[in-house]
Every structure is written in structure tokens, then in C-alpha cells.
Length: 304
Image 1 (cartoon, one colour):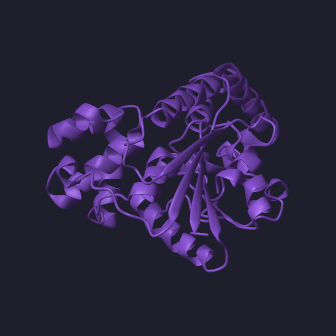
Image 2 (tube, rainbow, N blue to C red; image 1 turned 135 degrees about the horizontal axis):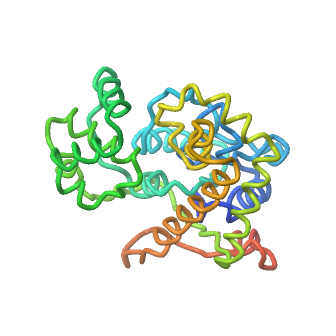
């Protein structure tokens, strides 16, 4: 059988992790996380990292191993995940990549354009300006430096705005001019598994998850990292709202409600991304499964 990377993706709280673990057990293989926040240490609750018990002895890679102040990008993930998958294919016929970070999944499947390395002093200086002058300044600076990128970027995704501007400054030319859109071939088969749920059920799971996180120590985790709140790794749903609560800008109930709302908004963006039509000549196979159907694992195995 040709070596196969199985991409398990879908909206947040949809059940990706549990399905991946069941699938890894059935195939006797391992899991590579494709989550841009789970990669960091010290924030397992807010990033919904599966616990040691939930992992059921299945090795998980690229999860909880980077310090919060480390730089990481989709390009870094592409290289790390390809290296890991090659290592796993030495021992297994399959490797599972699980996550809902859109750029990470696309980077693994299709590749990403080679971008210049951003000098640490440039990133530090830009970060300091951003902290002093705020998000509106950062957006205006990108609009001036790269109007094409600014026109199409999600302006609420400040991490992405920051990344586009730092690349522009490091390269000395607009970020948009560095993007070729050329897709890379992979030396293995890719089967993309999209985990689906009814939207009403998905949103109920999101709401319940926030309550579970609170019960499991979300506030204590947020307080531990609050002194580092300027780091990009902490610019995420669940922490931004609690930091605002710690700053006295909203009550705890308001912060938790805002987390639920912002997580639902993020899930909608993921659903839009997952609904994109696949190009007719794409080598990637796609299968959609529902965790509540009779045997989703067997459905995937039969496709293999």
C-alpha cells in the first residue's frame, strides 16, 4: 500500500482529536498536531489539548513543546510535519495529521511559498511598536506597505496582519509579491477526512466546552500567563477575553460569553474554508464523516 497521510480536520469542538485517536489505534500509527496554538507549552486547557488519558498511549507530535515566546509559522510547520511524516513512514504505512489551523493544513497538503527569515531584532522592534501604538496602527502600517495584502487579509486576525508586515519589512518588498500560489507535489498519498456536525450541535458543543474548560482550571491557566499577555502565542480566543476581564474591562460572565461567541465565529470561518471546492485535478482525496454515524473509523479504513 502506498504510504498515506490522513488529514483529520474540521471545525473546533467537532471531535477531530477523538476520531484521530481512534483511527491511530486502528492503524497502529501516530498523530502530528496541525494546531497553531496547541504547539505551545503552558496553555493546554485553552487550546483544548487532549489529556494524557485521552491520548490513550498514542504518541502526539508538535504538541505542547514550544515555549510561549518562540517564533513559529506555517512554513515552520510544513518543514517539521514533513520531516516527522517521513520518520513515521519508516515504521508505519500511515501517519495522521490532525488539526483545524487552515494555513497549517494547506501548508502540509500543498506547500507554502519560501519566505525570508525575519531577524529577531526586527520582530522585537515591530512588536514593541505594536504594543505601544495598538492594532489600528499595525493595520494602517500594512495598508501603507502592502495594499494588496491589506485588501484581502482578515483584519481581526492580528497575528496574520503582524506576520504579513514583518515579512514585508524583512524582504524589502510587499508580502503579496512573494506569493506564487504554486502547489508542491508530495511523495505520499493524502486522504483528507473532514469531520462534520450539524451546526446547532456544533455550537452547543462549543458552549459546553467553555464550561468544561472553566471547571478544569481555565482561569488559573490564564492568570499564570497574564504577565506575558503581549506575546503572539497568547493572542488567542479564550485568553484575550480573560485578559480583558483581569484588566477590569468586563465581568467574568461577560468574558466567558465572549469566548463562546468568538469561538463560534472562528468555527464559522473554518466551515467556510472547508466548503471550498477542490480543484478537479487535485491529487488529494476527500471524505466527510460524522462522529455520530455508525462507524466513522471503518468508513475511513474502507477508503484506504
